[in-house]
Figure 1 (cartoon, rainbow, N blue to C red):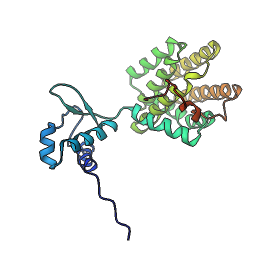
Figure 2 (cartoon, rainbow, N blue to C red):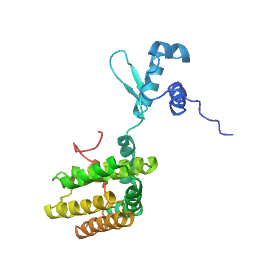
Figure 3 (cartoon, helix red, strand yellow):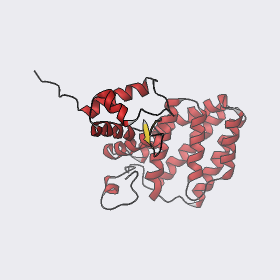
Figure 4 (cartoon, one colour):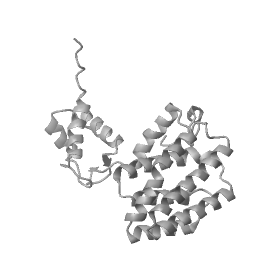
Length: 245
């Protein structure tokens, strides 16, 4: 019979605190008890408590600050998910074609949902970003898609696509976007925003699909369709552009 390995003390402490956070006993903004109190509560060493807290910190469930507040409870940011996603995209060899196929499955439907259900404030914010156009660094492009996904109100869609957007921002950092491409994408954004403002779900869905089809055509023309989004070579050497290094 194979015996289970005994849990490490830091894992046990982190596990108890993690359950309290995920179970709602500890909420974002709350502070954990002082280190001395945790040592007494769990009957472990100072180092064990510190390692446990580092585990929770790495998961984005806590944040350590100087001063009286100590260790505060928080919710993980999409960047935490994106960090793991970037690693998985590298290891699986996911291509730019895979990315656009994935987005075409979700974002047209999301645009239709937003056209039907977005608040006036959300519609206005989407329209405002669309009217700004797209700057050379592409920030407005990503902001438009971020706002649209957030307006869907679906936490799963928001979390997944926000992480995908962050991964794409890094993966596309070395890709050239010509002025024509930015202008074409900006026109497309304005058309999508107009349909959303009018509450026309069908048109919003069609416009988003056309927008992604244009992106797919551009990637194919660039010869990148079958290329990995994040080739292993980008992790080699002293590349200072690595995310979260």
